[in-house]
Image 1 (cartoon, rainbow, N blue to C red):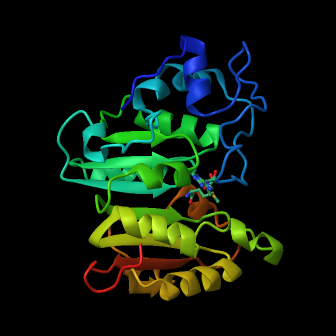
Image 2: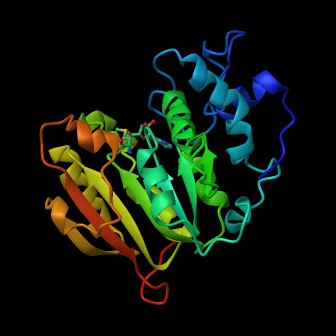
Length: 265
Ligand SMILES: C[S@@+](CC[C@H](N)C(=O)[O-])C[C@H]1O[C@@H](n2cnc3c(N)ncnc32)[C@H](O)[C@@H]1O
């Protein structure tokens, strides 16, 4: 984890790329996403409660992954305070309950958790606070900025759970599961690594299945609406629990095929 050069109050601010006012809650317009890749979602919602603001200020700086200024690689296994047997990646963790559950179930795995939504980041910090979990590191920016600087073939499992569906056709380019992002994932994932995706949006389900099937670096292991058929270590996310879309989720498990078989990345 890189050191950073910001003062105490501005530490969490700089790490999530937004501006924080003196009360620790007002987020302004300066952002680090103005360069490519362009980001399209919400970065902040309700005013943070005092405890959440405190966690952002005091805990995030110690757990945040900061990109090296010179563009060099982030040594993923070296992010954690003790040796880990594997490194897993969750993109768009929302409230972070799935990250925390995976960390609890797999205490020897290091988890890189990516989320841009400040309230979600604060929520994950709340799950981690006092839990004894020391294997989660947070990338509080667009995951597409981190993926190119993670070492090739070092991620053993990746999760993209209930990505924003962007249902309008004219917004299709914003859908995270697309060929360009699958290229990024295919590069960082090791041979045989598992990619887990879920969606409850019928249009996105079809979209994601097409994108995954079309990518030469991934092959299907399991695609199902039957939650009971999933591996035991696939706990529901907050979004899944809320059943926001009124459609049964479709769960995808894909394998990163061996590089000798097929690789365009
Ligand atoms: C619909 S929510 C689902 C959250 C969580 N996975 C769940 O199932 O409860 C999608 C989340 O992905 C995050 N997100 C979208 N694009 C992202 C990106 N490029 N990098 C990191 N997070 C992203 C959004 O901020 C949002 O919190």
